[in-house]
Image 1 (cartoon, helix red, strand yellow):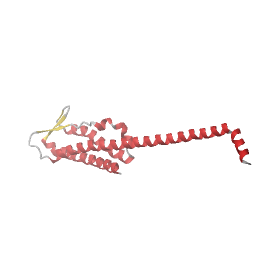
Image 2: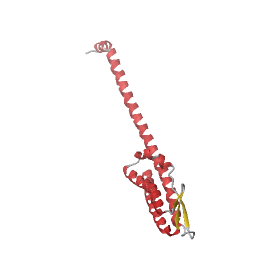
Image 3: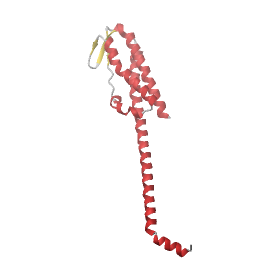
Amino acid sequence: MTLEDFIVLLERFQTSIVGFFGFLGVIITLFVTSWSSKKGHQREVTTRRNALRRILAAELRNYARALRKNVDQQKPTEANISVGRIRRLLSDHLTADLGLLALHEIDIVVNALITLDGMDTVLSNIATQTLDDRFLFASSSWEELCNINATAAEALDYAVQALEISNKG
């Protein structure tokens, strides 16, 4: 085959050759767009996961700090002790996003959230009076109240540690 034969062959199949390279270009464009979209989605999920970890850790850390503050106080001398109820703020609205966390984190965080939510029931059982925003306890319930607060603070601390370790890695 000579150069002239090759040129004639190119002219004869010019439309097919252009179509082939055009189709190949479309396929490459689709592949690159798909890859880019996937990477963007992965970055978005990673950002949401890290933000969720930080928000949950901050909220649980604050609750644990408040519970330990109750435990660290001296036994009150008054006949009744007033303790505020825990109202979850951010974590209550983020329940649907817990699936972004790793499985071991979900177990630990859900345990901490169940502990917080269960405290309301446990404290109402030993309270002499339950109000909308607080509990009233007899001073004789102080040790039991401290034990409940310490146990809950430990569960919250464990969840905070798990979230912080995962966020570093």
